Every structure is written in C-alpha cells, then in structure tokens.
Length: 623
Ligand code: C2O
Image 1 (tube, rainbow, N blue to C red):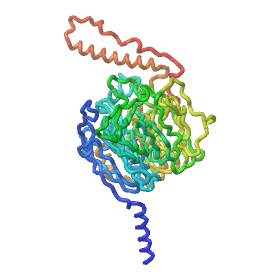
Image 2 (image 1 turned 90 degrees about the horizontal axis):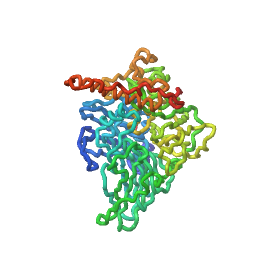
Image 3 (image 1 turned 135 degrees about the horizontal axis):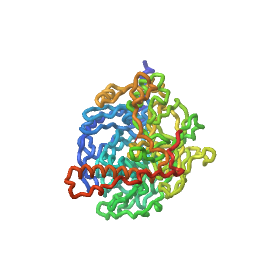
Image 4 (image 1 turned 180 degrees about the horizontal axis):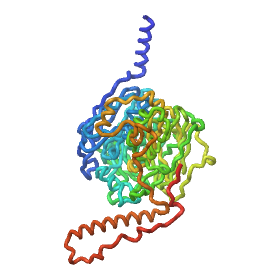
C-alpha cells in the first residue's frame, strides 16, 4: 500500500512539475451568418460563431482533450471543421475534410469533434467543405507547451493573423472562377488584406520585453511578406515544429503557413514602428485600382507618438528578401529519413476540360470527390481496402504501407506557386528548386525544371520540417515522411480556388490499421443521413462489388488532343458567342422583328473549328 501512495505522490509531483494536468477543453460553436465590415470598404455576410466574427481562438495545452460541438445554423450551406496541422493519430475521423473523413454537415445538423492534442505550437482551424472558409470561417488554434525550449525566454504572447479578404460570397466568386468566361483560370482577386481581421491597428507593446509572436496566414489565396521596421527577431517554430533559433527580419507566409518568433522590444518608447505586410502580387492576374497590397499596422510603444506609414522596400518582390524556410533546422534534430520504400511522383498542370472551364491536375487527375467519404470506404471494404482502385479513378488515391518511408516528388509545370499541405503529417523538405532568393515566388519565364533523381543537390542532414510548403513556379519539391499515422489524409494545394478545381490527392495510409483503430461515432453517421450522403461502399457507393465503379463521380471529359490553349480559348469564346447568339435569337424572336435584318445574328465564329497542333498541347501523360 505504501508503495502505491508513494507512486501517487510522485505522479502528483510530476504533474505539478509538468505545469498542469491534462484537461478537457470544450467549445460550443453555433455557426450562423453575421455581418462584418473588417476593411471599412464593404459590409458583407460572414460566417460567425456564437453570433461573433472574428472567430474565437481555440486555446489549449499540450496533452489536453479538445471537444468542439459544431452546430450548423447557416441555413443554406454545409460545413465542417478541419484542425489544420493536427496529426489526429488514432482519430482520423476527427480530421474534418468533407468526403474524405466525414460527410458535409448540412444546415440544421451538428457534429462533435473530440480528440487529444499531442503536439504543440501555432495552428488554425477552418471549414473544409467546398467553398466555405473564405467567407470567414477560420480562426487560430494555439497549443501551449510549458516544455517548449523557449518557454522561459519570453514575457508575453501576441497572435497576428493575416488574410486576404473578399467582398463577395465565396459561392458567387466560385461561379465566376469556374466559368466559360474564365477559360484561363484566373483566380478571384481579393478586395483587401487584413491583419487580425482588421486594418490600421496598433499592437501595443512594452519596452524591453520579449514577445512570442505567433503568425498565421489564414487567407484563401494570397501569400504575404511580413516585417517590422527596424526590428529583427528569432524564428523558433514553423508550422508546429520547433526550430533552432534563426535570426530574421522578414518572413513570407503562404496561406496556411505559420511561424512563431521571439521579438525583444526596444528600450525606448519614443516611436511606433510599422508592421508591414505585402501581398504577393505574383499570384494575382490583375491588380485592380484601389487594391492596397502593402499594409501598415503598428507595433505601438507610445499611444501619443505618431503612427508612420511603412516604407515598402519595393513595388515588386525584388526588394523583398524573406528568410528561407528550407534551412530551418528542427530543434529535435530529426535526421534525414532513410531511402524511401515508396515514391510518389506528381506534376501540377492547369488545363481546360470539355466544359471549357480551367481545372487543376496532379498528373492527369483533377481531384473529384467520391460519392462515399474515403475513410468510410476503408471501413466498409474489408480486405479490398488495400486496393487503391476502390477509391475511384478521380480521387487520385495512393495506398501507403504502415511505417514505410514515403518520398513525394512534386513537379510544377505551372507558372504559379502552390502552397501544398499534407494532412496528418509534418514532412521533411529535402530538395526544392529553383534556389531561394528574392524572386523565388515569381514566375520568371523559365522552362519547368523537373526533379532529376540522378542529379540533385545533396539532401540536408537535418531537413526542415513543416506541414505546408510552397512549390515554386516551374520548379519542384521533394518531401519525405514516415507513414506512421494510419488514416486517410488529403494532400492538396491550400489555395482554396485550386483545391476546388482539383489540385488534390488522397493518401490511404495503412488501411488495415485504420480498420483496427478507427471507429466512427454515431453522430458522424447521422450527419451523412441528414445530408443524404452514402457512408458505405466504394467511391461509387457500390457495396456489392467494390471493384465496380460504375456511377462514380468523374472529372469532365478531355478536350480532344490537338487543341492548343489558343484553340481552347477560341473554342470557349465561340461557345459563348453561340450561347449569346441563341439567347439573342430567343429574345429577338420574342420581340417584334419587323425591322430587324436577321442576317445581323451572326453565326458562331469560325474560330470554333480552329485546331492547331503544337508539341506542348498534349494532355498530361498517364502515370
Ligand atoms: Cu488547412 Cu486540407 O487544410
């Protein structure tokens, strides 16, 4: 008996030393539309939680159990929550992406997310159902850790979120984006850029004090540069991975990326200093008059002193030289993973399909959601779960073996940069080209450089690790991770426009282990019933024969080989003029036509038949 009480005593001591006992933190999220006008330019509908927007920050300690009860009261829109960067080891069903690990939660339904948080750092949460988070449905998720190596090195904490902001509802923008009028796939241009969901704000600081500043870009599209005039800082965390401290004065955060930095304030309170954010204009097809790419907020030492505008280093990105994330060394010094057991090679393309819209591809597949959430296919497929084909031809599913070292080579045949995120993992970034520099994020009219396994730079001994990484224009990335987290994990470009146009694939990681470990709570199945989404069967919801994919969701048909981009655009405009022509005929047909010369209604342009064959015009080849 004495021994037991000693043990009890020591474990209490251990808990006290650890800081706090693991607890359960519960949030009730009633999701409704509210109105907001964060940039003072336009009031609009936004997704609020408990009647509020900006959304609450989820704040927990490492080891806590987090419970989020989400009640969708939007009335007209389905939703879900993804906790970006959480491993969800053993709780894949709590990951949040619709049609991957759950059904979309329809209006009037609710769902509970419940999992233990076994990691620490700076994260965020966001809606992960088609077209929802750019309407404001995203917030910070912070996991405190008294054992962080820098825990005693700072006095206070500041969270700075940055985001692009649209003045229109995402579904209206989506309709313009995926449209005959946008055959080149130009992404909707934001109306403004916010810091902490507002503009021109002052972050008040004390002199001679060290702050842990957590930076999050929770935008939908545009990466941003960040610096504070006359200040340097130390990077100590990137996407939840502690790093050897690295001095820096400027950062670039693509959407979904995070940093934590230590900044010691000056000892004088005479001046205030601009916090400058610069939107990455290389991502924008057009820059409308009045769109402010460079924004100033202030590190405020003195309320009564002046608040000067930031001096932006250059109008284009050549004057901006952010710290390179490739050479960040993880604090745990995890070494380069051994030679891979499995390699996945994919290339990013942007192409038009027969609908005339522009789609995004990894190789020849533009991700098209299955009829059954892929995790539910794993759970209902028995032994067939190990066969990638049951997940459908258009989900780009790859089955990973438990504990394999996986190498993913990502080439970019597109002239835009793409921030890729893998759910459930932090990956090592072992090669990336072109080399980092001030113009890294810009398309410089080069030819694509594909990864050459026989001729690459030597891999770092302690590679940088994170969960979201920018694939540079026309360049490549090589990442490695261990498949030690059984689950269905989506790998996708975090530009929400590109996710919706197909830039995604699924990792079906250790399906036999998923079947052993994962069970779906009843309320998750209730969501499917309410949404009329099947939760058994293969990608086509076939429960009899898992290899029969008849009826699966498919990407639109290919445009016959031989059409060039010019030909496609000409075709698309011909279709548009034909449609306008027909509409005109109908309208005029209904009107009094006495005075009309019918030959005015021109036939569709003969460009419609233009077929120009060029070498590069072939569709991407099959894997
Ligand atoms: Cu922020 Cu699919 O993730």
